[in-house]
Length: 339
Image 1 (cartoon, rainbow, N blue to C red):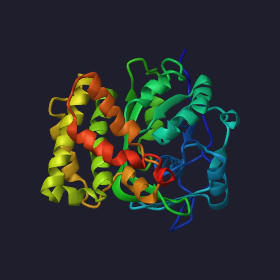
Image 2 (image 1 turned 30 degrees about the horizontal axis):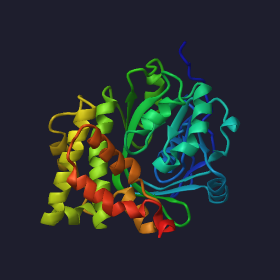
Image 3 (image 1 turned 60 degrees about the vertical axis):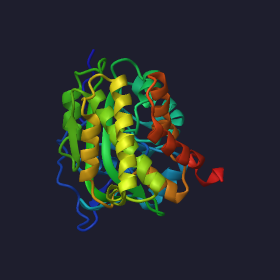
Image 4 (image 1 turned 90 degrees about the vertical axis):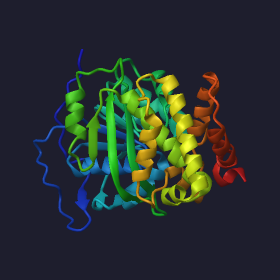
């Protein structure tokens, strides 16, 4: 049976644009899916705040330290697209969330295992699950705990981080989400999903080939993160240096070969498309892996570059560029705690 979206009041916390401190113009008649954001960090905090700003009912499911921070300060976003200050609805247990309809999963790969029990509970109660994690292997982990039909594919492009106060700092024009059904996804609720996500202050697009899109993002992201973190420079410096640009090209070619071996729908010119995307990025652009490395935080090298190497081995694909980047970053995988 289909899951019909209920009408929700929009006042899930006070949403105040920083400059005017006036409530949004969304009326109480608006009806959206109730979104549960797991991971109110640089990605989940940004998109959750934008949804709340536009009248979507949002609950942030967070750990205790983040709960205290949000309760004291609110959720603040400093963005090139306009600042936001949200007084968020917060929960620390899935059991405390009423009527969940969409889980927006935005944790780091190394926090996924800890989030799976809460994802499972919310999905068992009928919620669709839309992951915005980097990489691809998390789909295998989620399929083990999410009932058939309720898992979607998704990806995002955004340059954001948390500052020392826990505010989201969004520094580029990119704030895009692509989502879509997997082969066994329930399509009956896609119109409600479209209504909830589209035209909510960021770019949201539904794709009917989401797996191929996720692989294309994986090629782009693994190259961007691997190169900016290894060289510890933004993409503009890498593009202008012949040796660094050559390593970037080799990495993209190897990642594309792996992607095509895993997913036949990935286009034959995937590496060229990825390199064109990297050429169009602002010169100051870096990846979250680079920013986490600079802060001494754990990095996702095992679940991004490491998984690529495992898949390459399974297809007997030679990957000297990826292997070199992985080896350089591997000692930093646990952050400064490992040193």
